[in-house]
Length: 256
Ligand code: 2AL
Image (tube, rainbow, N blue to C red; front, top):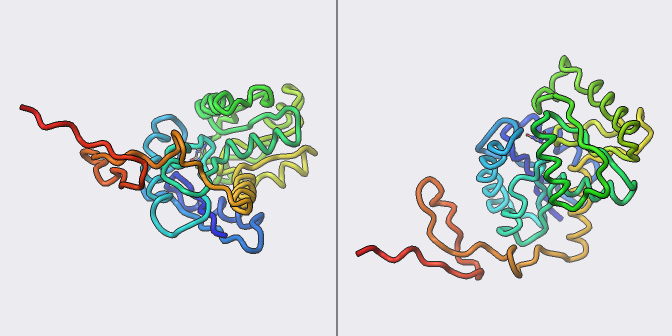
């Protein structure tokens, strides 16, 4: 099977980290198609970055090459439901996948993420996904996303220290890594913490494989049906949904 793993930020070096993690866990018959968004922010660290990332994400999902499932490799899960609307196969967000994985193996987990503002976004996701009973804490490390790639940022040590505090103060049994740029850290952290450390990229790839193997698709009944066919205007006119059987809405009646 083929799984697209899409980095919705425009930093190719981060995609390389994500792709390596995805390929390390993929089953022998799974091809990982790693993609970097071609438009938008170099790192996604706020609501505006997220909103702007969705156009590039949608292009990656709906354009070639074909795949059986897609993974959105950014911990804010930007555009997750929009992506599900336009896709036939399963689409997984790494935050959703990581939180569900953690809930299977611990009664309580902590999320360790990057900046304070992304910590707040992760808290929103915990509530949106109904994970309040499982998530015991969401913690920031004050490391900007692209700093994760720089050895001089001391990111590994800072993240390890925050994970240690999370286990003690939140009384958590597992750690969820709150950024796709941390996809290379779970073995380093697990060896030192002695608890499961869940990276959403790898969790999402394995859930995607499971869903495809089960023959499951995204439901096209209700709000995840293909978008209504209608005109779009201005800079987004080329994103107007095509007629895929989800229904058509004509443009407004001419005035006068
Ligand atoms: C992210 C992520 O995973 N990639 C990115 O650009 N921003 N999210 C985060 N919480 O730091």
